[in-house]
Image (cartoon, rainbow, N blue to C red; front, side, top):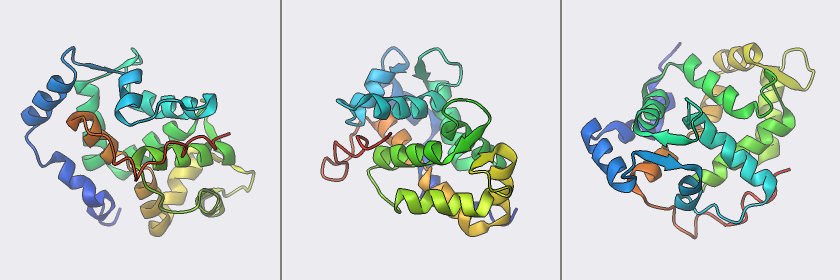
Length: 202
Protein backbone atom coordinates (compact mmCIF):
# COMPACT_ATOMS: atom_id res chain seq x y z
CA UNK A 1 0.00 0.00 0.00
CA UNK A 2 1.34 3.41 -0.92
CA UNK A 3 5.04 4.09 -0.68
CA UNK A 4 6.37 1.82 2.06
CA UNK A 5 9.88 3.24 1.72
CA UNK A 6 8.92 6.40 3.63
CA UNK A 7 8.02 4.31 6.68
CA UNK A 8 11.54 2.92 6.87
CA UNK A 9 12.97 6.42 7.23
CA UNK A 10 16.46 6.32 8.71
CA UNK A 11 16.26 2.53 9.04
CA UNK A 12 17.67 2.09 5.53
CA UNK A 13 21.10 3.08 6.80
CA UNK A 14 21.23 0.01 9.02
CA UNK A 15 21.73 -2.27 6.01
CA UNK A 16 24.28 -0.04 4.29
CA UNK A 17 27.06 -2.40 5.34
CA UNK A 18 27.77 -5.76 3.78
CA UNK A 19 26.27 -8.68 5.77
CA UNK A 20 29.78 -10.01 6.34
CA UNK A 21 30.71 -6.75 8.06
CA UNK A 22 27.70 -7.18 10.34
CA UNK A 23 28.70 -10.79 11.00
CA UNK A 24 32.28 -9.90 11.85
CA UNK A 25 31.18 -7.11 14.21
CA UNK A 26 28.59 -9.34 15.89
CA UNK A 27 31.08 -12.18 16.40
CA UNK A 28 33.73 -9.83 17.77
CA UNK A 29 31.23 -8.55 20.33
CA UNK A 30 29.83 -12.04 21.08
CA UNK A 31 32.52 -14.69 20.34
CA UNK A 32 30.09 -17.48 21.22
CA UNK A 33 27.78 -16.22 18.49
CA UNK A 34 25.04 -15.70 21.08
CA UNK A 35 23.85 -12.66 23.01
CA UNK A 36 22.20 -13.30 26.37
CA UNK A 37 19.40 -11.31 27.94
CA UNK A 38 21.85 -10.09 30.60
CA UNK A 39 24.24 -8.84 27.89
CA UNK A 40 21.33 -7.18 26.09
CA UNK A 41 20.37 -5.23 29.23
CA UNK A 42 23.95 -4.40 30.14
CA UNK A 43 24.68 -3.15 26.64
CA UNK A 44 21.68 -0.82 26.75
CA UNK A 45 22.36 0.34 30.31
CA UNK A 46 19.22 -1.29 31.72
CA UNK A 47 20.44 -2.76 35.00
CA UNK A 48 18.60 -2.18 38.28
CA UNK A 49 15.10 -2.05 36.82
CA UNK A 50 12.03 -2.94 38.84
CA UNK A 51 10.22 -6.22 38.18
CA UNK A 52 7.61 -4.82 35.79
CA UNK A 53 10.17 -2.85 33.80
CA UNK A 54 12.30 -5.97 33.49
CA UNK A 55 9.32 -7.93 32.20
CA UNK A 56 8.73 -5.45 29.39
CA UNK A 57 12.39 -5.35 28.39
CA UNK A 58 12.34 -9.16 28.41
CA UNK A 59 9.32 -9.01 26.11
CA UNK A 60 11.20 -6.86 23.59
CA UNK A 61 14.21 -9.19 23.78
CA UNK A 62 11.96 -12.21 23.18
CA UNK A 63 10.68 -10.74 19.92
CA UNK A 64 14.25 -11.02 18.60
CA UNK A 65 14.72 -14.52 20.06
CA UNK A 66 12.47 -16.25 17.53
CA UNK A 67 13.44 -19.84 18.39
CA UNK A 68 12.94 -19.15 22.13
CA UNK A 69 16.26 -20.68 23.22
CA UNK A 70 17.07 -17.72 25.47
CA UNK A 71 19.68 -16.16 23.16
CA UNK A 72 19.88 -13.84 20.17
CA UNK A 73 22.10 -15.40 17.52
CA UNK A 74 23.34 -13.79 14.33
CA UNK A 75 20.61 -15.31 12.15
CA UNK A 76 17.94 -13.90 14.46
CA UNK A 77 19.73 -10.57 14.55
CA UNK A 78 19.86 -10.29 10.75
CA UNK A 79 16.25 -11.50 10.46
CA UNK A 80 15.19 -8.66 12.75
CA UNK A 81 17.20 -6.16 10.71
CA UNK A 82 15.65 -7.38 7.47
CA UNK A 83 12.14 -7.29 8.92
CA UNK A 84 12.52 -3.74 10.19
CA UNK A 85 14.09 -2.40 7.03
CA UNK A 86 12.79 -4.54 4.19
CA UNK A 87 9.73 -6.29 5.62
CA UNK A 88 6.28 -5.66 4.24
CA UNK A 89 4.03 -3.39 6.27
CA UNK A 90 1.75 -6.26 7.33
CA UNK A 91 4.76 -8.30 8.52
CA UNK A 92 5.96 -5.40 10.64
CA UNK A 93 2.50 -4.81 12.08
CA UNK A 94 2.19 -8.47 13.08
CA UNK A 95 5.57 -8.20 14.78
CA UNK A 96 4.57 -4.99 16.61
CA UNK A 97 1.33 -6.67 17.74
CA UNK A 98 3.19 -9.71 19.04
CA UNK A 99 5.55 -7.43 20.93
CA UNK A 100 2.61 -5.65 22.59
CA UNK A 101 0.58 -8.76 23.42
CA UNK A 102 2.39 -9.53 26.66
CA UNK A 103 -0.02 -12.20 27.92
CA UNK A 104 -0.38 -13.84 24.50
CA UNK A 105 -4.18 -13.81 24.56
CA UNK A 106 -4.52 -12.51 21.00
CA UNK A 107 -5.49 -8.95 21.90
CA UNK A 108 -3.75 -5.89 23.29
CA UNK A 109 -5.28 -3.56 25.85
CA UNK A 110 -4.46 -0.03 26.87
CA UNK A 111 -2.03 -1.11 29.58
CA UNK A 112 -0.07 -3.45 27.28
CA UNK A 113 0.12 -0.82 24.56
CA UNK A 114 1.30 1.86 26.97
CA UNK A 115 3.92 -0.30 28.65
CA UNK A 116 5.57 -1.53 25.46
CA UNK A 117 5.50 2.01 24.02
CA UNK A 118 7.34 3.31 27.11
CA UNK A 119 9.77 0.38 27.02
CA UNK A 120 10.72 0.87 23.36
CA UNK A 121 11.07 4.62 23.81
CA UNK A 122 13.39 4.03 26.76
CA UNK A 123 15.43 1.46 24.84
CA UNK A 124 15.90 4.01 22.07
CA UNK A 125 16.65 6.87 24.46
CA UNK A 126 13.96 9.00 22.87
CA UNK A 127 10.47 10.24 23.66
CA UNK A 128 8.44 11.01 20.55
CA UNK A 129 5.15 11.70 22.33
CA UNK A 130 3.28 11.31 25.60
CA UNK A 131 2.41 7.63 26.29
CA UNK A 132 -1.23 8.41 27.09
CA UNK A 133 -1.61 10.44 23.91
CA UNK A 134 -0.12 7.59 21.89
CA UNK A 135 -2.39 4.94 23.45
CA UNK A 136 -5.53 7.04 23.11
CA UNK A 137 -4.73 7.87 19.49
CA UNK A 138 -4.17 4.22 18.53
CA UNK A 139 -7.33 3.02 20.26
CA UNK A 140 -9.43 5.87 18.89
CA UNK A 141 -8.35 5.10 15.33
CA UNK A 142 -8.20 1.29 15.40
CA UNK A 143 -10.60 0.01 18.08
CA UNK A 144 -13.66 -0.32 15.85
CA UNK A 145 -15.91 -2.04 18.41
CA UNK A 146 -14.82 0.29 21.23
CA UNK A 147 -14.15 -2.49 23.73
CA UNK A 148 -10.84 -0.99 24.87
CA UNK A 149 -8.78 -3.77 23.24
CA UNK A 150 -7.32 -4.42 19.80
CA UNK A 151 -7.36 -7.72 17.96
CA UNK A 152 -4.68 -8.35 15.35
CA UNK A 153 -7.26 -7.68 12.63
CA UNK A 154 -8.29 -4.35 14.16
CA UNK A 155 -4.65 -3.37 14.66
CA UNK A 156 -3.64 -4.10 11.07
CA UNK A 157 -6.80 -2.65 9.50
CA UNK A 158 -6.55 0.51 11.59
CA UNK A 159 -2.96 1.13 10.48
CA UNK A 160 -3.61 0.33 6.83
CA UNK A 161 -6.56 2.74 6.69
CA UNK A 162 -4.74 5.63 8.36
CA UNK A 163 -1.36 6.50 6.87
CA UNK A 164 -0.54 9.04 9.58
CA UNK A 165 -1.25 6.54 12.33
CA UNK A 166 0.89 3.93 10.57
CA UNK A 167 3.78 6.40 10.43
CA UNK A 168 3.45 7.25 14.13
CA UNK A 169 3.31 3.60 15.20
CA UNK A 170 6.21 2.62 12.93
CA UNK A 171 8.42 5.37 14.35
CA UNK A 172 7.34 4.68 17.92
CA UNK A 173 8.16 0.96 17.68
CA UNK A 174 11.34 1.40 15.62
CA UNK A 175 14.06 -0.77 17.18
CA UNK A 176 16.70 -0.26 14.48
CA UNK A 177 18.78 1.82 16.90
CA UNK A 178 18.77 -1.09 19.35
CA UNK A 179 19.98 -3.43 16.59
CA UNK A 180 22.83 -1.05 15.76
CA UNK A 181 23.84 -0.96 19.42
CA UNK A 182 23.72 -4.76 19.66
CA UNK A 183 26.10 -5.09 16.73
CA UNK A 184 28.36 -2.13 17.44
CA UNK A 185 28.57 -2.68 21.19
CA UNK A 186 27.91 0.97 21.97
CA UNK A 187 25.56 2.20 24.65
CA UNK A 188 23.36 5.27 24.08
CA UNK A 189 24.73 8.45 25.54
CA UNK A 190 24.09 8.43 29.28
CA UNK A 191 22.51 11.86 29.06
CA UNK A 192 19.98 10.65 26.53
CA UNK A 193 18.76 7.57 28.38
CA UNK A 194 17.70 8.35 31.94
CA UNK A 195 18.26 5.26 34.12
CA UNK A 196 14.78 5.54 35.66
CA UNK A 197 12.88 5.88 32.38
CA UNK A 198 11.37 2.43 32.73
CA UNK A 199 10.66 2.48 36.44
CA UNK A 200 7.19 3.95 35.98
CA UNK A 201 5.87 0.90 34.13
CA UNK A 202 2.97 -0.85 35.82
